[in-house]
Image 1 (cartoon, rainbow, N blue to C red):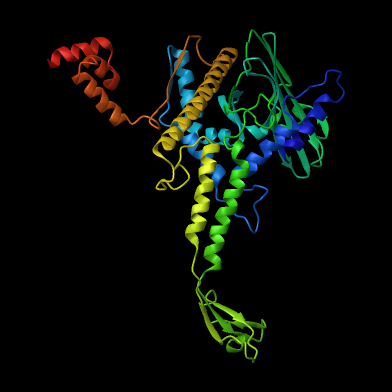
Image 2: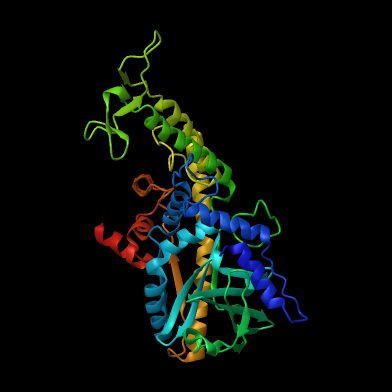
Length: 453
């Protein structure tokens, strides 16, 4: 079921028989865009078909940006036995698969990292942008009310569970409502949570006091919504390149067709072929079916020879140049450095343009890292919250640290050589160099410098 249709069904179900109408900040326009980004990522864009094939650009863009964002990320929780417990869950359930889900978040515009309690203890769920429905945000951009959808089918029946998280004046309410339907046009009839075996262990409502944010982390791509300026939701990393990607797919298909159309062949009169009496089709020489193309031969002054080689000149370079130029436009719109998708050996861009594109890419990746760090911090806060509520680990303080790699813009070898020159010129102290490159404290670095002297 598509996302925009599900949004309408959820709104109808939640606002039925109630005086307080739930007004979603997620508009149908934005929901349709989320659908489009999801279809593009899965190579099911609406323009694809028999004539136009996918060049796989959306997945390549999201995958590359996810790689750059999480490249050599180091994050750790320390400070107490509670911190040790959180670190074990954090490393196993979040960090181990963060790059994959960051890619999905980049593609669809957002991602929620939602810890929860199960019979196995503390677990974490990654909810993609087309599976949650934000209702409201606060002034800082944090979600204050949100609906999560869980569904499954059993024979001819469809079961939907709507898990609503609401924050109001330091009070968090988590409610579960279950619906059963026999069609795809509505959520159907509401039933109790206990009537569905797989959800029978859930409470219909739980309320927690003294909480200042909902127990999950929300990562959203730090780009403005160009089509819905008032939307607080994130947008896909390729949201501004949709039309450029469509044209790139067309250019790619034209290039692919050029090779097929100009494939060497032999035109042969059908009178030279044997007709199979069972299939009533002409048979080509065994294993050469792809090489021969039949035509009718009629006696006359303008007739072609019975055999004619077909091997026209391929114009692939013109198509390659057109495709490459379109990829450059996609790179610019997606904040990627030139040469990420396009041919890096193409030198039609100046050195200044290439340098500026790398800086633009670094700035965007840095913004995404900041947004992801905020989501991870909120997710860890939620994990700590559940640890306290369900007494999973002793009470204690914790600190979470992050180290984000910046090698996409900084050449470490060149920077290190530059620092060595600064030391030799007296512009940088040797102990400062050791602190920076050897990870020593100031006291350790000074001690080592004295020992070396």
